[in-house]
Amino acid sequence: MEEKLSILLVEDNILNQRIVTFSLKKYDHKVTIANNGLEALDRFKEDRFDVILMDIMMPEMDGLEATVKIRELETENNLSNRTPIIALTANTMDNDRDKCISYGMDEFMAKPFDIEKLNQIFQDLEIVK
Image 1: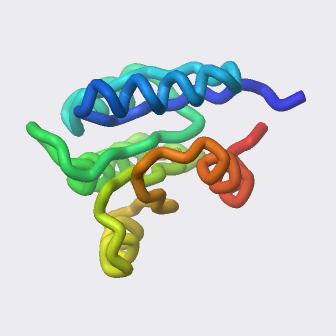
Image 2 (image 1 turned 60 degrees about the vertical axis):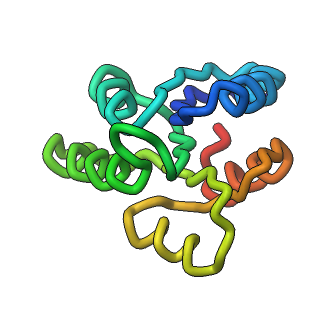
């Protein structure tokens, strides 16, 4: 049996938060929500997560900048296990995926949210415990 994952969901849209959280909790994953990139940084400093699901377009700090800052924190704190970050975005052009990867994200998933596709990404990135 697979162990549940500790997931940081960074998403400013409440409806999207509910949809993603509902889907993830069906698999008994623990979900922590951050409403923007600044909150994501605070949560990341407080706790370790198995994976971060990161929206791109958010107020305060977008997902790209938050990803860069998380990668900087990992380096500064000599964290040997890099936390996988998966973009969740409505932007679906080919260059959007490349841009996300260039900012330090590990994978890219287009909205609307699809739990089966996300589970496949978890397997591909070997996040599943």
